[in-house]
Amino acid sequence: MSKARTTVLARLRLHDATLSVEELSAETGQHPNTVREHLEALVETSYATRTAAPKVGRGRPAWQYQASASPAGPVGYAALAAALAKHIALHSHHPAAEGEAAGRAWAQALKPAGNSPDNLPEFSAATAPEGGGAAAKTISKAAAKTARSGVSNALVEAGFGVQKNRDATELVLTTCPIVEAARDNPEVVCAVHLGLVKGLLTGSGLAESEVELLPFSGLGRCTLHLPLGAAAGTQATGKETTAHAAGTP
Image (cartoon, rainbow, N blue to C red; front, side, top):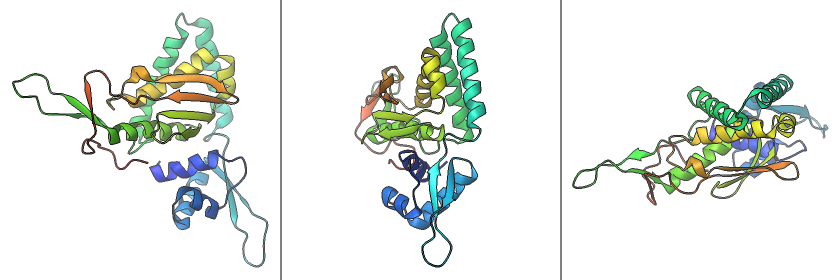
């Protein structure tokens, strides 16, 4: 899913009421025709639904759009997730560790499928310093922000409602596709989500160890803190040239 389409979906998920093409165009800054194309694609893939607005005057009524509760197959997906989480919680000696490992595997499955394009730039190997020695690895501020925004986009595609701050270091998860499973077995389900985020950041040059998930930090929401700095052995730079993904939101 493209970044522009993910933005439309993210805006839909922030509203309980239906929205028109014009309203979404104003919120996203995209042309109405472009927004309409994204919305139709989201409807076709079950990420959104549409209903006819009350007819005013002649002509066909306009469409109103709303985000689906979660991606296609929400009931079966939630039930399966709940069953797996319960099994791990009951039978594993290390439920949190197994949950995080499952989340990392999920992240690896997402990357080759192209579900998070233009999101997760690999950091670059710089030339070896004078006098020999290992090549330094660098990540620019632009690439770091792109990687964090990529996590946000991937979570939106996975069915979360996400609000992010300006530099995407803090993500507030306003909805969760498997919230009931998370309430019943938070140690497992939240560990899966933590592993997913860490796995998405693998190779970005950001410090995975600094990822922090605060489950149920507020009424009906969780908070995710993403690293601002580079991982150990990686140099942060202010240059824009090391970003390998297209653009930054």
